[in-house]
Length: 304
Ligand code: MEV
Image 1: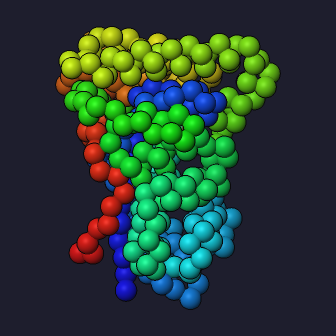
Image 2: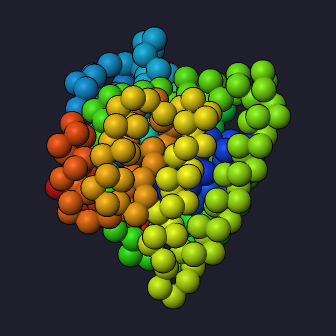
């Protein structure tokens, strides 16, 4: 038999990096997904569409080690194929979506009966191979879908809301492991400074959650909080010239707010605004990724 499943990417609206230190974050699943196909094999291997990898799982590449951990967790040898609608290494949760879709397909294929919580837990174990010390926010939202608050493994669903979100991709890949370990280094060297920044981000998340939960959220207020969150991420030294350029262009074009999203150092930013903001991002060299919030988390797919 062959089984197929998919899982969504994610967008962090508030609280990235600080979430690793126990601060809550606000995050949603997006409409772009990763698809995994799994079939039994004598020896595990990976085929990866967009970067044309086709290899047994015993190479040095992090991606191969990541899937090796996955097949170790399920205890079965498998031929895995990954097809992605999400740019890889762009801060949109591609590794969590890869892990969750693989685990869901493997669960169907081998009759493992993995529930959503178990998928998120195993996906977090796989993420540790590529991310070092992840908070677990990415697998949690990819497995569950929707719009959530995540703090120390606890998920609180938020009211679904129609925020006019625009994702701008710098086109530059980055490594979550690198930016997360940069913040850890800063935290070791200047604990008072980083501690103060984490508390300020915590306050921003608290205010943003309260506003998002209103019957008609005030976009101006939410936007200001996003921009303030970006300034604090700049102080944590995880922004980049490319991200700052796209954030600046969005704000100049009248966005309610804008910030980097995810690990930073490249990857994506997110703005709250209309078509003129999309235009400004494009004119500044950004790639606009059209995608709304997705209610659905990991799911089985039919094989076509
Ligand atoms: C990455 O999507 C989000 C970070 O906060 C890392 C993590 O929480 O694991 C940068």
